[in-house]
Length: 121
Image (tube, rainbow, N blue to C red):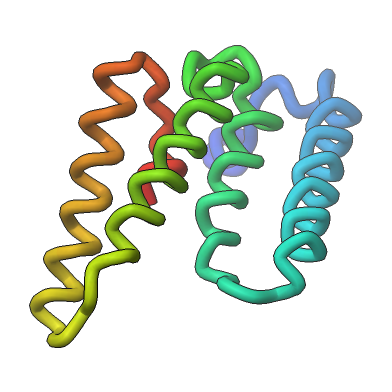
């Protein structure tokens, strides 16, 4: 029985409603993102899902601040769009482009103090 108690957050019985509301809000946020994207580029859902988790499950985390969420995603979109302009004539060129985009995104987020791990993806 003691091991079973260790599986669950000890605060769950006191805050179950908060957990339910936070999970529901994250679900709605991801659904709105899917509707806005019209199910194109579904790979972006992984990033939005991770962001929704951080924002709704850990709202007091530094990475959940509006500066980090918005700034990090803005940097990720801009850097990713820039690297998408380069031709991908081979798998190696494509992989190099992708890795450089992630590396540059991370660098710019650190320099501008807008670190948001899901945005780097």
